[in-house]
Length: 491
Image (tube, rainbow, N blue to C red; front, side):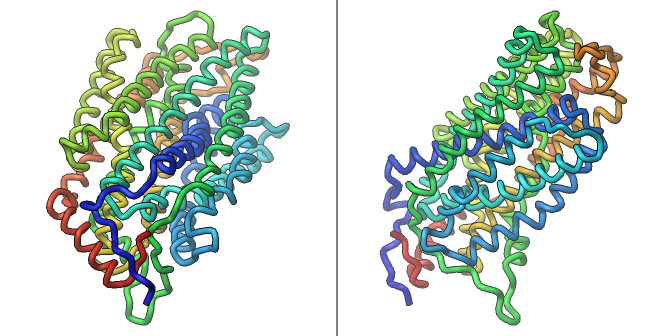
């Protein structure tokens, strides 16, 4: 039996040095710089720059997520079953940064292709990007599970890392908004400015992102030496069985999936800016940039403000309460945004409610990850097995599925109200937008009605989540005792 060290429990304090805390959070910022490029703008780029058929884009997103349903658990099982001489989770960021960088730049650089060849190129880049990103994302966000056995410290680490990751969303939000009018002022047409601003964003954010993200491979310590997961013996319950029968984890996964609407305020902002009929500036590029910027700044304020406040909120509310209160309040604010915005056609009057409707984005971006970690504690306490990476893969899949569903909603809205993007530009590349009131309302609904309904649905599974209070404390205490008895090293 392996040598046993005294496990550090909740009552014995924190174990992660401040320097390591900072490095992990900076690495999260770098990773999210790259991810935000894709999640915030891929639909606008595919539909309005590459002019791909909406049906093709929708099918691509759905089929890619079907593959992820296989790919993410596979990656989780690989990580759980194999530990390299460099560590279990640490090597993957450094192994994957260059392929991710290349594919991200390719995703937002328009090739000299049209029709079917362009579709094939786009599909290959998008699917491979998702696969390589999974190979880095699952191990990276599994790291907090083995950096500390302390749930409170782990929650604070995730909170700070997700907050720093959110900063990158703000950077990615602002850069294209600035570049559009600048490029138009340099003499480029509306269509050309749209194309070049995304290429500039992808190249600059990717270069910085990979340098920061790679830091986690060198400066983070894996303190909990969990044994490799093994193939099930005859008659033994398998890894997937344990995942699907871990009630707290399944409730969190279901809630996270239903909360896909939380992405809409950011993902749909460029589309709303183009087609929802809000006019702040007569110049098309400046108007799109200004409207999108107002929407996304509101999202950033609500999200960042909440993420910064979460360590303080932890002192008064448990994870379940934070999710329920924020989702219900965010849903009400979303519906009010629709009422105010559409009756007045004044986007500035919507600023307070848009900020409030973004609070769940900050809560869910942090708390869902912490709840997944707690659920894995529960699994290990109940079964004696901990599928760390496989459990984290569930969260990775939920995030990508949520982004895909938000993309599908956007594309479906284009199809439902018959918006033809090819008719929105003249031969010179200048924008000529002319939509009906119904079409404009449909686009505005993407950032109001859709997220409001989604947040209400998200709250339902959390009503049944009970891994809080005394039950959580019991699991934490008894798990430490079980690990000591099994000889699991906690350094």
